[in-house]
Length: 312
Ligand code: MTE
Image (cartoon, rainbow, N blue to C red):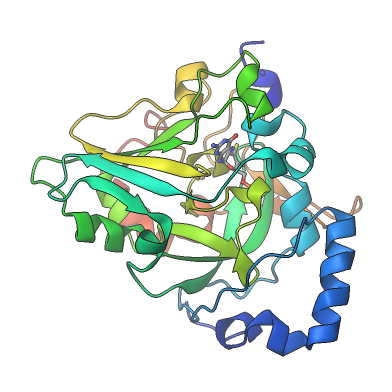
């Protein structure tokens, strides 16, 4: 994506479902593990989060914490995959609040703790497919966005949900550079936002969200290309019009509003038929990309009758 900027089912519960990481590993190993991870770039020790298992998790093996936290797209911190790991510590993620407004019954500025109390936190092990044709499996911790929307109450005419990332150029060096019209913005149709697969995630691997992955809270929409999963969200607005989205605004011919993972619709400059699994090693064969990233059973109905080539 970097070079395109105008000049850029059920599964057995796992340890994280039931056991805080400290208990699972034993305190001494956690300390040793945290030091090792910090050395590898996973950053400082983060608070543990208890979460319950979800039937929506894949049984595919998750990528390692190191892979998930060292190969990132978070352009607010630079254009290289390793820039977020190096620079995201500059962002202050506490205190944090989300302003919820537009066509809702109960608009307001909700503190993070209040947002996180909306619904029980779940571990959701999801496939994650970037539009750049690489993929990972990530054990997110979060809760359904639908629960938050129900809590604030969508007004009858609301059709879309718009999301905005933190705008703080003094903490986000990428926002001091040209290329993107900051802040990063994204959007979903309301029915997509209400789908049970769509979550707001506040952690991964049983711990608070690392900053490079979008601390303290981000969207995760597993059947769409990764750029829809906007990080470090500060504003959620319900509206009756399709909201502007960062990549569509930059390159409308290459990135659409829907951005559903679709192996049959290529990016104008590369194929989307296969993907490179991060961590697979240099000799690993590319894997076939699945329609809706493997989530067709849950989401294909959202698009029945729609031309997915026109609505890319
Ligand atoms: N959100 C913001 N605010 N800024 C970004 O640059 N990059 C997107 C998405 N969310 C991005 C963002 C892209 S292109 C991808 S692939 C995913 O975040 C990467 O998420 P990850 O780094 O947690 O794997």
